[in-house]
Amino acid sequence: MGFLSVLLALLIFGLLIFIHELGHFLVARAFGVKILEFSIGMGPKILSKTSKKSGTQYSLRIFPIGGYVSMFGESGMEPVQGMQPEVPAKPKIRKPLADDPSGDSSIFINDLSENNAENTAKIEEPAPVDPELAKQAYCNKNVWVRILISLAGPAMNLFLGFFLMFVYVLASGSGSVATTNVAGFYISYTSEDSYAGLQNGDYLYALKTDAGDARILSLDQFRKAVENAEDGIVEFTVLRLNEDGTDTVDPMPVICAPFSDELIEQYFQASVSSTTGSPSGLMRNDTILKVNSTPVHTHAELSYEILNQGYKPITFTVRRNGEKVVLKDVKVPTYIADNTPFGDMDFLVYREANFGPKTVLKHTWYRSLSTVKMVYDSIKGLITRRYGFEAVSGPIGITKTISEVAKSGYLPNLLYLVIVISINLGIMNLLPLPALDGGHLLLYLIEAVRRKPIKREVEGIINFVGLVLILILAVVIAIKDVISL
Image (tube, helix red, strand yellow):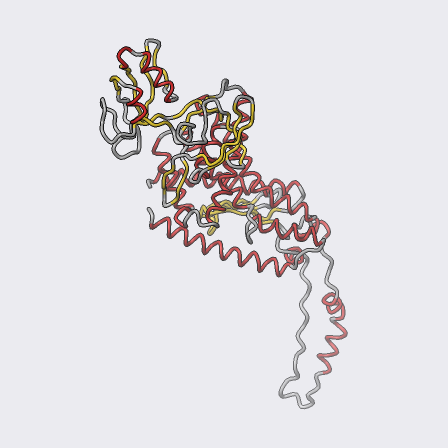
């Protein structure tokens, strides 16, 4: 990781933390809570400025691993009590001097009872809290106000993610928006022996015709092209992975040779998910409505659900010839990444017919929801051990990923990564864990149901223990990320 990559990561983290804390700040101010400090980062201060109007201190701290909004009365009424005028301390009762022969200490006792009676009364009856100060204390706000303040930070991260998704869809253009309507299937060459330059694993891509290239979408289409060609000789391009399997060979290899039905039947295979590849499968022009029980509306949702669920046989609910049809136990190709199996979408879908505002908003909304679901699926996968601990990344691991994406030079990919991080930050903070916003929300909801606040001491202990555990976990993840650099 170079200096510029680290700087870019710091800017991204700073933006996301700022947006999160700004949510808490704005809602707290809207409900009249006094803000003591608005901080980006943790640890020692780098920069700090105090507003003369509000008294709020704005700080930038050295470690970009978080931030906070410190609110007046956040830990109970102790800070409010501390703002009162000081009460004179109770005078000490002096002992008689050792060389006093009488040993009479009545003079000192009389001094205390007569001259300090007013002070004693003040100590026994504490002065009332300043009503104006009490109104600005966080702890004195209605429980629903505190719930809204806690929700505001994660909500801002989600809002930012959704907004940036809108920008991403616009920036990616019409090529990034596609339907769930099946356009065709991949046709692969399966023989270990080469024929006319074909290699095992090649995908037939496009037929060369007088009218131009025609994408090969089914075995039937390829058979008809062979039947109509003179002596069965057809010319077409193929998709072929390079030696390390990271990209396709460019330019595409061109094949020109005679073929027959017997050769096609023996050496060519359609996608696993197609009706020709399994007893129950997809057909061209099927519109996929569900993957297992999950509704899908766009290609992005469809490809993710196949990725997430397709390592096992899945059920497709499709609209076929105007009717709903349920296709059970459909198989798709699978692959292993980081010791985890994933499904691979092996068919093509049609693009959207237009790229108007309605289409952009549709894909923004559903792709954002799919990203939210992806975060929850990841958490579930960690709990159920589908994913190992190596799948967890902290700021160091994320910085490495940002560096790798930035090096590609394709800005939409970097933008999408920021979207995922922002939505991930919003969702993670909603988890009902101590010291997180979700932990506060859980305690406040319990308070709302009980109609009685939880003891401040208990709440403090819960949050302290949660914070310690989160810090320990952060250190462990940081060590893992450093080792994997």
